[in-house]
Amino acid sequence: MSIESGRVVGVETSRLWLETISRSTCGSCSAQKGCGQGVMNRYMSGRRNHLQVNMGKFSAADFQLNDEVDVSVSDKALLSAAFVVYLLPLCSLIAGILIVGQFSNQDLYSVIGAVLGFSAGLLLVRIYSMMVANRPDYQPVVVAIRPSGCLLYTSPSPR
Image (tube, rainbow, N blue to C red; front, side):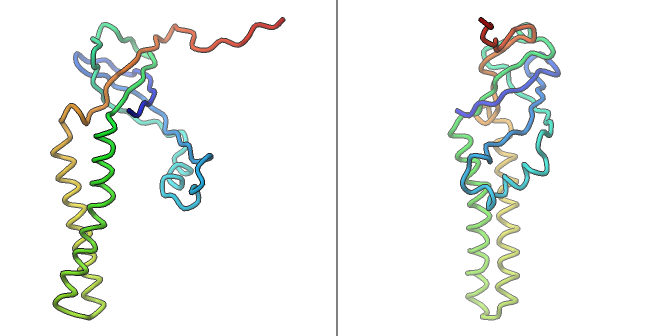
């Protein structure tokens, strides 16, 4: 399970609104210069996002504004979504090239087939995202609460 931290900015009867800060481990990655995530993170470092999450086993009475919480999404949901988002447009782009290539050997038609195939792949990704948008196993869920008045870390006392 992937776990991310956030701060409670709103409490509803069955959901929470969290504020998260985009973070990255790009500094320790060997592919940091060739990765799109690294580029995006440099331009949006520290950007605050608002996210609506399920309370899981907790109730609305357990939360107060400014509480720190940990949220999680299942690995299955992350892997299947990543597979669809990255591979489906690529496969449809290649299929578009191959289908148009059956009818013409001109490069212009291959480019048009690639654009149409890629566009079809993006449309399928959009349809997939609408299908799984309300499925509980694809929703982030609160797994831990750290009340706002709680001291999280203490420094060692001087001797």
